[in-house]
Length: 365
Image 1 (cartoon, rainbow, N blue to C red):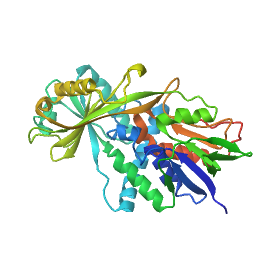
Image 2: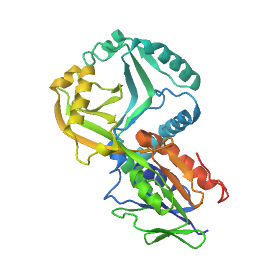
Image 3: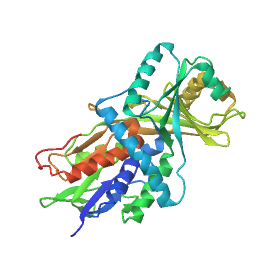
Image 4: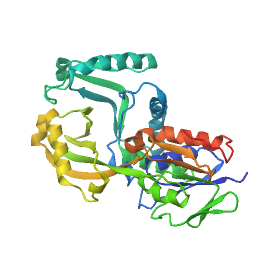
């Protein structure tokens, strides 16, 4: 049987995970195209890899179902990849969330009960227990801490590179430094991307998907939302060993007293600049010092800012088969959850590919 030619546009976490999962199916001959010089240079690189599933407040509906499916796949995906590449992928098991408002405790107790019914544990620690477990690290205003052993943090670049390497071992071709300059139909079914013909096309290019989608006659407006982080060195030996999140600020320990401090910042599109903006990084540090006073003496080693794709006028992510191009699947615009939802996105795309859907009837998730 002649394999079906499948092209994936985009080699971030989504595209790399698609390539890895689909490469297990011998029906496809897979090529991944990306305009960047290597994988994980876009929104994937603008992430700390904090994967919040069980700790999220949603308990039903599409939002929770996506997270539940992806958490289950991550349990097996990480050891699969580590076995394939012969080395561990840096990361942490478990997340600690700090809650400031005592009025929120009943809501967390309710979530704890629901998660227990769903098969997940959440531990609620009062301030004294929190200080016993992490002495001297956090300030006193916290009402409680919520420990989720099922959530995790994973190094985004290392994970994406592992997906790429393993997919290459399975025969996937990755073509970098290749922007999509021409996309057109050839005959009734074939699609030509630049000079490459394919039977299936998957668009997973993050913010770059908007311009590519226009070549398909599809409006896919997105807003870039800034993510920012500081790599710092803790000033003493009382540095945290756990990944901690507080008021949407994440602290990710790296070892040897080094850590990432990061957050997402909502900025109007007309104020977004390509170069890092020191005032936003200073705001990040100032907010974090309210939670971790030791940060006032911490040394800054590195700073970066990057952008995540948020769809306008519709919920994230966008995963659908196109009506007018029935052999094109869009899998993009994951906003802040690209790394988290990469495995479930690949699973949904597999289902769309495997399901016999009439060309006039789009399959939309």
